[in-house]
Image (cartoon, rainbow over all chains, first blue to last red; front, side, top):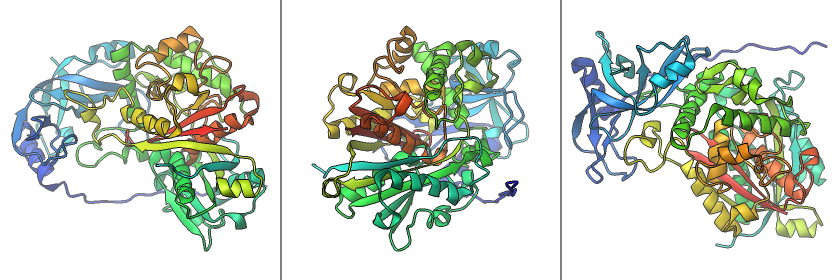
Length: 150
Length: 393
């Protein structure tokens, strides 16, 4: 007997509200190409991306603080394998602590030749200085900016 | 707090494979349940409650598939709940079953589940959906890339190499070759791991777990029930969970409380379990460990979180050859572990089941001789769900 199979597909649409804090953050990125974090009044830490409350003190954050455009790489990876519904490889992305921030924000790394994995990994080593580049056309998303080595 | 003792009396595992086209989802759950019931000579009618182990719905492609499984586990007219804590779902399910008994609500509880990851062609698409749609999901984050970044930070802090990572796979594949239920049972070499194709630097194909189909079930009972029925048992003497905060980027930078390189909250979870079990010195008191590690590098931070090695030292200890192998000191993942079999919904239950089989002396060819104290762990989400247990003879 042949065991039969059935192909099924989920394609579901959502419209997520970003809330007040993220809406302000993305409006500044979209309109002014500037990245801001939120300061925790208890610890003084600047959270980027901004959160309405601190992950550590749990207190509501208060003032906006402009950060970047330069920063240092805190984590990265370079993807060489294709995953369905994710970008075609190779690509590099990871996390950068921008100047004035205490936490790291995710983004793509561009402008590095990814042909040789080991050589590319050396160029993106943790601690490497990068700067933020913004797209000309911005819509208010983390893909509006990326990082390039200085 | 002194909780009543809870024992494990029955264990059932299917073989773990790429696909099980001969069995649909509830049939696969039933297969594991039947094995666990046979193991303790009980019937479905004897079970007072059922805890159902089921990870994110989208992996299986069936919404709330515990509904579909309700008859496979015989839960009609019984206490019935589903647990989902991502990768640690299985150990969280055992913890929930334990709670039913420790609370005095039930004397005998079935915990069961299965997964058919091999039927899902888009697992990293689904894993991308665990990230928030506001700040993170536009990036191609997945479990592989998330843990590749953890590997990079661990390398940066402690000097781990890709060869060190490969050594975990060589060890665990050699263990899996002795475990007839394991999915990847072919032994390998450092050279073979190193030459496998790059997936997400520094993780290569052979550093990754397989996508497995299979089921696991366990029967837990109160000490009173076990004594009254003259049953064989091993005992859950410690159990705990711990969580880290949400954002990956908060585990780096300045002033963080946990580094993404490590598994800080897994360490907290182990400390809680050890305290409950009265374990003060795990290196001396633990005989064998089944630690959830779906990628080679994560076994190192699990070993260190379990207190079996100083932070940052486990790669060198594995390289030196004395530790973590079957036949050596402190064997880790004698079953082959998660890198050799990963039926996600039950993977962390398999860790508890294998720990139990070890202290029971029933692990077969991958038995650690004389093991009396075993530990198990499960990791879920991006560091949010760390479950741990101590199982003793």
